[in-house]
Image 1 (tube, one colour):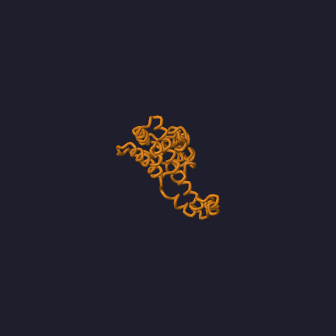
Image 2: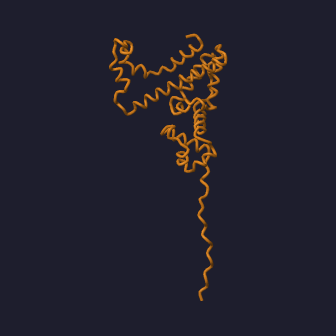
Image 3: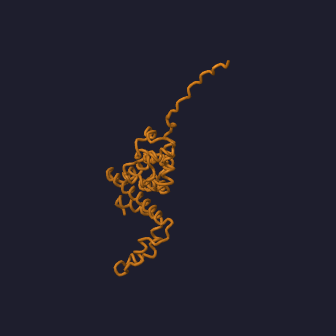
Length: 227
């Protein structure tokens, strides 16, 4: 007589389970890759979660929103590129050197400037350089409130120079057609606009030159009343 088979244990129930744990470092690294490759506009919490293989809710354990994520990106970038270093003892030269260091760090990574132009997002790793500019202006004789205003003027010049240059390069990329400016300058009336008409043929070359350093020194001289 055949013995009845032993009862089989019930099959385990399928459960959704928790998404894999993610680290803040992974969040920052993935976000950095997205903005480097596609720009800040393509960075969303949903897109970031999909790239990591997690859920937007899981990201909120590390960052509250996109703005906080951008602050983390700024701080990560500044920590890797803006390192406190020896600056000139002369306060005027210290201002120039600190601003130049910021410009040198930001110029290759224009997406950061697009974020920083919001003016309320600041990396703590960049504050050392801001301190050097403000302290240098105070050392040159400006009161603290004027020194802070001077720093803002220097920052606006620095950020604006990079944004304009990068935007122009993007506009020209892969497009050989004359720009609107080139079309306008080609038809300038030398009687009405003699200087612009004279410079029109050299405008591209002149405006493509890197004059940040000269402009920075002129700005600092003007802030200190020695232009």
